[in-house]
Image (cartoon, rainbow, N blue to C red; front, side):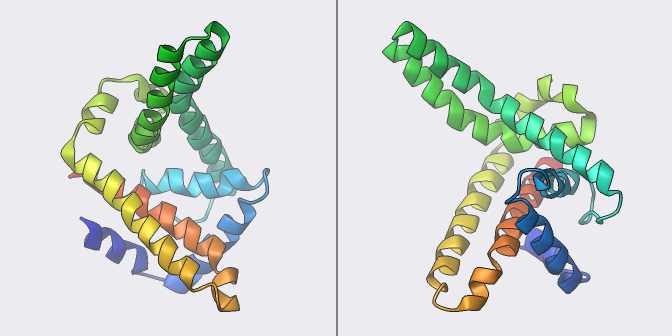
Length: 188
């Protein structure tokens, strides 16, 4: 599962994709262009290969969809935390703080469902089925573990100036790797 996803990312015109990924990731530091990078990640869950960079308006709208789905999976946790603060309930606070990481865990499945079946498909039982699947758990935790390990190695290379300039592309491809890994795990 991991090697196939990595092979998929490095096949084809790697140089062109790296430059385009760097531009998208660098633009994500600014609020207005951030949906372009998010839209590419959203599209990566929908296509068999890596998506192209055409239809920029559609990519922007897809990015807004990804942001909407991402925020919506965290809302229950934050809502419970806010209610706990208002009511002064310690137990409710604990429940809220457990819902936030749970939202992060199901976020990739929610993005996959939204990109392949529309925004309302996130409300289906399939979200729970995917989230409880072992291959999904391996993809999410394994992908995030590999991305974190790569970040540590990358951080150790900050002695040189070149890695600093490549940081946006590196972060973009970390996220792309995790998104594609989850997509492949769901579709197995």
